[in-house]
Image 1 (cartoon, rainbow, N blue to C red):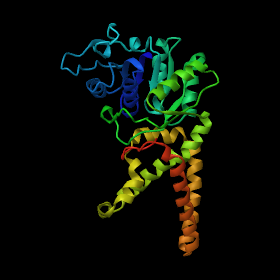
Image 2 (tube, rainbow, N blue to C red):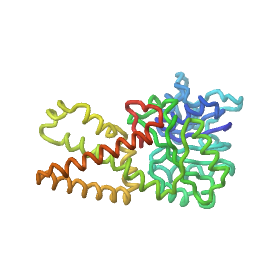
Image 3 (tube, rainbow, N blue to C red):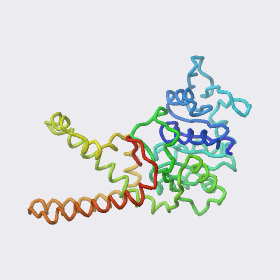
Image 4 (tube, rainbow, N blue to C red):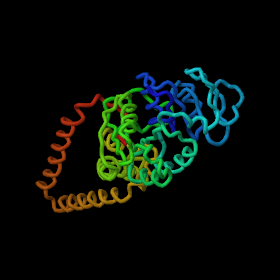
Length: 332
């Protein structure tokens, strides 16, 4: 069991990780750190975290008491220890630290925790890109980078905040670890066991493999969904178009409801791989346009049939092995 887990970001990803660990009895005490005072207060109220820390201004007590100095809310420590108030005290003594924040914040967060990082603390992340995260970790952590094990849970929803956190978000879902050469086996295992406690299935890739794969199957689909909705909204008759948009449009564009800030960061962080996939997709659209313009029914049907077959095979071999996903679930 992990004695102390610190989670940066108490919204959907971090909050669901906390809920999963709690249900599994895998963590004695969970500290939430977030830039949002409202999120911290709500996460405490919902019982997602046991105590809170924030750099900056004091966090208001959700019970209506006066704000507490040093940016911490006093919550009873289940281990009977003195509640932690200061940011540096929240970091010290942690068994595991999870960064569940936009990838562009990785370097800043690592810089903030580095002066207070114990030698036996393992740090991991939940970012949707890995090469840029590894560069940030190496730059900031230096010879302590062996304590950083990159990761990415392949699960999510387009809703966010503490209220979006659910206990079974990761159940049966893949979590990809991209270990570094410097990582000790015990550090990798600590991260893997934490995700397994949440019900995840562990896979391993290199950071470069990860970013190429997810540029194709996650990052490009998000870009396309955002682009289509934006295009429709900008048309002079958008009200009419949206009036008649039905289930097909809703299904195709569901992931356009995800956080724009997060996906801005992901798109830029994985720019090279995403541009490669986007260029390939544009070439495919050019071929389809030529077939349509030529009235080539056979070519159009061949493309559609191949896509239908490939999707059915994917569903049968991959998705059938996983539990049903919530209707608003969206893999990152």
